[in-house]
Amino acid sequence: MFNRACLGLVSEDRIVDVELGQIKLFSKAIGETNPIYFDESAAKKAGLRGVKAPLTFGFCLKSLAPAKYPSNEDLGIDFSRLLHAEEKFDYFLPIYSGDRLTFSTEVEDMYEKKGGALDFLIRTTKVFNEAGELVQTQTNTLVMRNG
Amino acid sequence: MVDDEKRTHLSYDAIKVGDSLPKLKFGPINRHTLALYCGGSGDHNPIHVDSDFAKNSGFEDVFAHGMLSMAVLGRLLTGWVEQDQIRTYGVRFTSITQVHDVVTGSGEVTEKYEEDGEKRIVLDVMTKTQYGRQTLSGTAVICLTA
View 1 (cartoon, chains in turn purple, blue):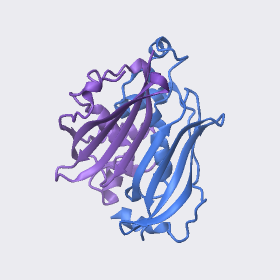
View 2: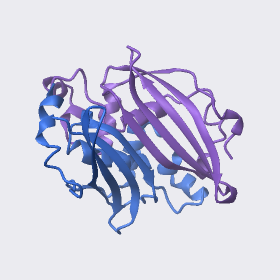
View 3: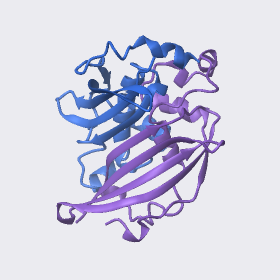
View 4: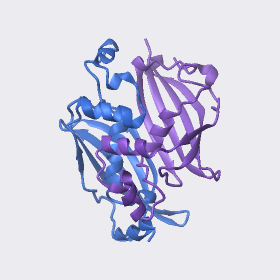
């Protein structure tokens, strides 16, 4: 069961530098063919300030900079019983290599289904740029099998 | 900005509810794909790359990251419109994608509406395996204001 004491907690701010190499590797892994997602010169030619981060890359930045508190351990996450139920992005501004972003995550909800056999955890992460503008929000739903 | 120039190639008025997006096929997803995605994504959950861990957790074998299919389905969207036109993108992971599966992403226009001064459409999107099993089901909202 997820640790109910974490409900409502907001993590520390995590500052994340968006690295060109990480976007390139991600784009390769997902079979991306549009060079603005992996080729710096193609991105520059297209008038972009860096290589563009693919649609779901923000999730990776979040994974690479997990909250220290509450951490996955604090939340009682057991990876062997964990499944990813839902993920949602609300997009406000694009992300490019070279950007410096700030992530902050709130533990929004926890609830049980199927008589406690399944336990749900919802966390919302806000991503801001250096100007303090909201870049995107990510809503993450995890489910843990109990018993 | 290139994003703004290309934005006009799809017209809100010409798009109808029921229109389909061109499908996108990905795979077969092999262990190398999963290892690449593990490193590329920063999602280091061993269940996707360590078959011993997967077996000890009660699974037959490693299975694909749900977020890998979400990323592939994202490519379907950004192959159709400019990424900056996409306002929201959310999915539910409805079943596990096994290693060796081929996933096909598809999308259909389900709604047209105007909000915040923008002409927007709603897409229902999904991925299915070669066996016809749905693995992911979701929604995207796209701005088509010229």
